[in-house]
Image 1 (cartoon, rainbow, N blue to C red):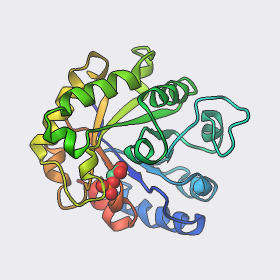
Image 2: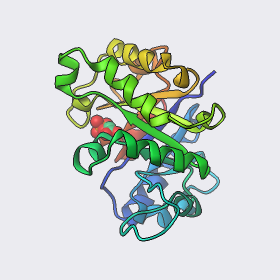
Image 3: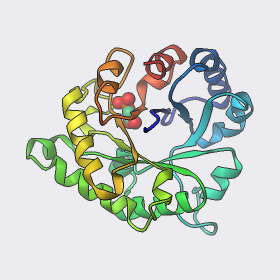
Length: 241
Ligand code: PGA
């Protein structure tokens, strides 16, 4: 059985003080969750959030990681640094990084391998653009992105990978893939030999009002939540689906 996992992707939101308050509000609301609960906060908030969630069922995550261990990479953070700061998870290859920060399938793979080998759990994002879906390329794109991202990982290392299927046209738009669309594409990803036992989340405008239908689908193992992760009550509704 694959344990569901709901992760909040706070993106570029919340100061340390706001972040600490959000997790303080969240703790009592999600304490009985049946799924793994993760908050991926901006790195400046790790020190504020970590002591608050200590001893609770909420895990800390980052939103990106560099693939080198150390060196002259101004502005970057290594997997060891994230671990030392208390992170257990890291999001890799989010579509916003692919769109705005030059992330490629190659760098997604480098980051995924570096993160997993350092002992982090990687949440690897894949997903098609609107025109790609309309042209019928969705399956090909998600299969390719998945194969590229996981290349070089052993079967054991794959236990520390979560895939987030996020149709780019559904992120922050209020548009959600239908339950069946999400289930079908996640099934395609799962058919990749490498992804057969990996947990696969859906992401893209997932929220309290649509979580139940999505989570009822057999292939969907959880969610990567943007907008609805920024308020404790909203995120708790998703976590307690
Ligand atoms: P959204 O973002 O829930 O605001 O659509 C999801 C994501 O980008 O991970």
